[in-house]
Image (cartoon, rainbow, N blue to C red; front, side, top):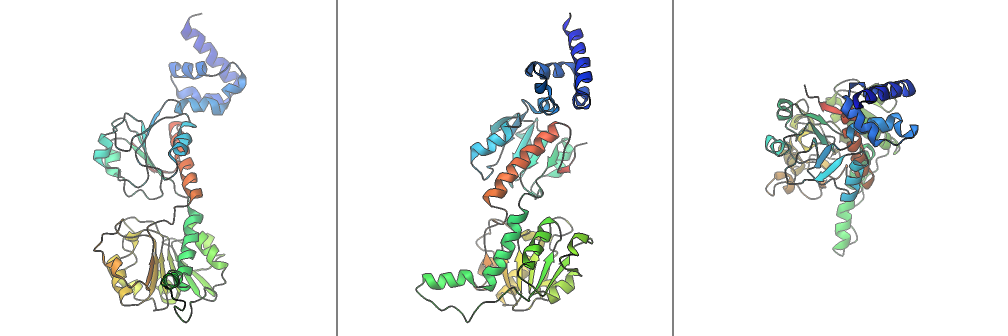
Length: 366
């Protein structure tokens, strides 16, 4: 029997035997399907739908262009387990079909180094560091990881509130300097008003955690009504939230609508005993106004994110009195569990894109 006729017969048998699962191969050329069947074993189990679909990803080249913040072998394994040929190309050019970054900028110059790229996989929630216009012009899609660190970020929001309220960093500094008494006492979260700005997954989880401390009220604000918050608190205007809250925790994404949304006029509504927590993005706050008001002791803050990261040495935020703010270097997302989860989701994003079932798409190539 001639090879083309043999392949056609084999395809007909597969369609009859495996039904819808194998019919997903109908959009693939005969030579491609032939290669997939050649790689399979003689057993029917080897042609299970999942195995057949995996043939699409098999051999596709993926270049990792930024360290993934987990052991290198774990990152590589997450990708190779999906059937990809992976290169660790932190600075080198590649002929990869997909590139993987975290927060490193993906510019026209970066894309020039990977001319065959059809997918930018961002192992991060934010993607404002990717030149979407350049990707669009080149027919490159972009995917991200929207919900890998929900618990990590929410827990740190509460942790920063406790660090400020209970004066933890200052008390440690006193102890290490040989002292014992720092102040007349900190404050409790119980019976305070907590305000949540941004009611996505992280904002909702943060509200759940704060609720366990017994606040008198939880207020929430979102650009659109969020029914899921109604069991946790009351949705109000952002002005009312800043007027009434003892603790304000920020959880909005950074985009054109939210850039600088927390301006001087809102922050001036806070009281000296109020605490502003930012575990969202530095750009959602007017950082110059924030530094100025903190230096005036108008309120206190717990800050994980900043307008420019790392912070320039001359930035006024670093001149804020040490007892007015607890500042840490953007670590809210960074837990062992979250980073491993992020890598696995990234690998799955790439696999599903290869299989023609893309998810978490922030830019779809035309």
